[in-house]
Image 1: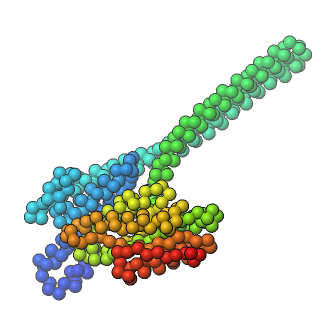
Image 2 (image 1 turned 90 degrees about the vertical axis):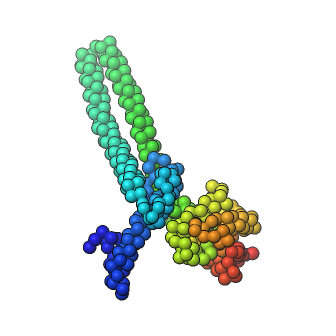
Image 3 (image 1 turned 45 degrees about the vertical axis):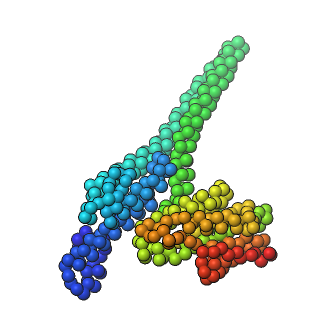
Length: 373
C-alpha cells in the first residue's frame, strides 16, 4: 500500500465506477493534501507550550496558515510565502517549519526530563549527605563523651569540668553547623521545585483549555458548575449559567470548508474572552459548536446585558470566503441557580431555554426562570 493510500485508504478508488486513472490520481492527491492540512492543524492544536505559553496562539495561527497553503496554495505572510501560482506549493518551507518545531519540542522535553532527574538526583544526594553528617555528628559526640568518661575515672574535678565544657561546645557547634547546612540544602531544593511546580501548574492549566478556541474544555466546565451549585447552596451566592449554540454552523463547514469553520470558532473564542472578562467568569467549549458560560456572583438580571452584548458582537465576525452579507449568529439560553438546584436540574433548565431560542427563529436570547422565581 502506498503512502497516499495509507493516509486516506482505498475505499475511494474501489468505489470509482469510471475507473479513470486521471480522476483516481486527482482524487488521491486531493485526499492527501486534505489529510496533510489536517495534520498541520492538529500539530498546532496539540503543540507543547515550550518555555512561553503566550506564543501558542501565534503558533497555532502559523499552523493554520500552512494548512491552507498545503490545501490550496494560500499565502503565509509571516513566513514570506506568497500566494502560489498554478497550484505550486513551497514544500521546502513546510518541511522546514515542521522540522524546526519538532526539534524545539524535543529539546523542551529533554530539558524538562533532565530537570526532573536532576531534582531526584539532588534529593538522593542530599539524603546521603544527611546520613553522612549524622554519622560525623555521632562520632564527634562519642569522642567528646569518651573524654568526659576518662576524666571522671581520674576523679580530677578541673579535668572533668574542662572535658564537659569541650563536649558542650563540640555538640553545640556540630548541631548549629548541621542545622545551617540543612536549611541551605532545603532552600536550594525548594527553589528547584518551585520552578518545576510552575511548569506543572502551567501544563495542567493548558490541558484544561480547548486548543482551538482557548476556552476551557468540557471537563473544566463540569467541575466548575458543580462547585458553583455548592457555593450557591452554602452562601446563597447568585450564579447565572449561559448556554450558547452557533446558528447553522454545519452550513459554514459544508459550504466554506472546515478551515473556515475553525477560523470562525477561534474568533468566537476571542469574542467570548472580550465579553466575559472577570476572572471569576468561566467560558467553556461545551461541544462542537456550543459554548457555556458560568457567571459567578451575578444575577440573571445583571447578566442579560452581557449576553446580548456578546450576541451582538458575533455579527462582526467574518466567515472566510463568504460574502459580507453572511453573518455569524447564535442562539442563547440562560438561567439562574436556585436553592435546591443540582447540576442536572440547572443544565436541564438552561438547555430548555436554548431549545426555545433555536426553535423561535434563532439569533435570540431566552431566559428560563428558576423554580422559586
